[in-house]
Image 1 (tube, rainbow, N blue to C red):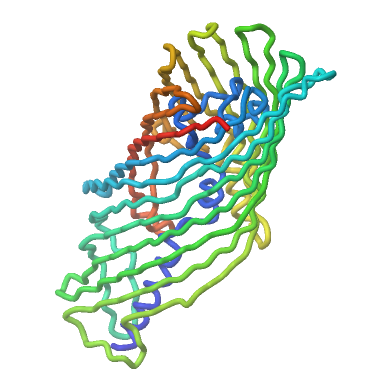
Image 2 (cartoon, one colour):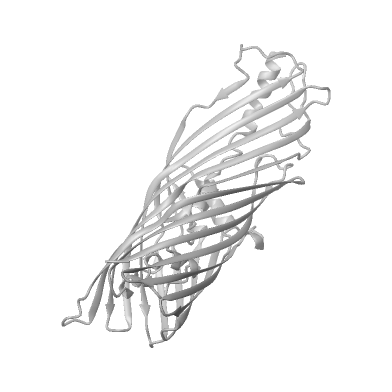
Amino acid sequence: MKKLYFTVMLLSVAYISNAQTLSYNNIGVLFSQENINGTARFNAMSGAFGALGGDLSAIETNPAGAAVFLKSEFSMSLNIRNTKATSAFYGTNELLENDYTNLSQAGGVFVFDTRNNSNWSNLALAFNYSIVNDFEGLWLASGNSGFAPITDLYDFDPVVYINSDGQYFENYTDGKNGKYSFTLASQYNDNLYIGASINTYDIEYYQNALIEEYNNDGNGNTFDVSQIQELLTYGDGYSFNFGFISKPSDNVRFGLAYQSPVWYTLVEEFVEYDVVIFENDLNITDDYNAGDTYSGLNGFDYKLRTPSKLTGSFAYIFEKQGLISIDYIYKNYSNVQLSGANFTQENSAFNNDLESVGELRIGTEWRFDNLSIRGGYHVEKSPYKSAINSDDIDGFSFGAGYKFRGGKLDISYQKSSNTSSYNMYPQYNQVNATNLDFDTSKFTATLVLNI
């Protein structure tokens, strides 16, 4: 019988191994995404700044916007994010709410007047740091699928745990993708702005996934499995982008910007802990150390190329009273590619399962002396071909700013929602994926100082 239980334990561990943490395909999509996460003014207008410039976060969308600055300045932003995660798994709903705080942006721009004997003016040098993706989060799911993924395991005297008493899953993630942009831009005559940036990235993603499964054989014997997997992926990357802003009239602005793929060099570290508990069965001895296993640290290096990004923008300026701005961003996620090992299957999945998507951003701003009122709306389509409409990220924003001598203070509020699914047993078709609903709110405050 001891051999039976040891066999059951080994097969169960092998069966659900690599089921909880993200696959390379999911990592590829996650690392290719960038959130609207910048200055409060940028966030309040839902990031619709491609044809406007004059904001340090706008430079990341279109580097030509650095030349729109009339004077040098420094800005720093702090945000507080609230995330409500609701899971649904076989009729059981779980709600978890958490708050997170980050220094989301910091940077400066230096403007030099080069108008003397030249059509070029307002040479601008800028540096900006921003968190393009914040991975910190926690959600859990519980329920009873009615299936026992660990089943039909026979030996000389088989005990088959075919009945499920329930499953429990907990997913904790941490880390961020930090972007550092170095920009050079200038104005030509009075109607054209041109700029280019070199960007570096410092990325770290940590995931701790716990799964617990409770099974029985129908005769009073129970078999409980608890497994923890930890995945740490970190590395760095680089990209470049360039763009221009055209001003055909005093009221109209057009913008076009291209961002290259991000080329990442990544390191992966993975560990797994497994605990198996038998009750009302023949006692397990320590002969096989069957009650607790540890995989040891497994390391792996590889490379990731994200899709490039093209942004087209339009803005209309109502003299000094206000403005309306629209950005459309295009990315082809099927161009995500892994290298450094045999990723033939994963790269084929990128090509077959993902598609090109668009993101629409609309923003407006209205000025009343030293006070500005802002608002915005954005929608970003899911890159998965099998996605449903609710998987798209949909949200709105608003905010205000107040100018004072030597600078200004801006605040914003953003709210967005989307759904997704997470498959705890990707190798076991009988168990459905967990349905997830995310509701995210973010408050941002930015201090801008003239220098």
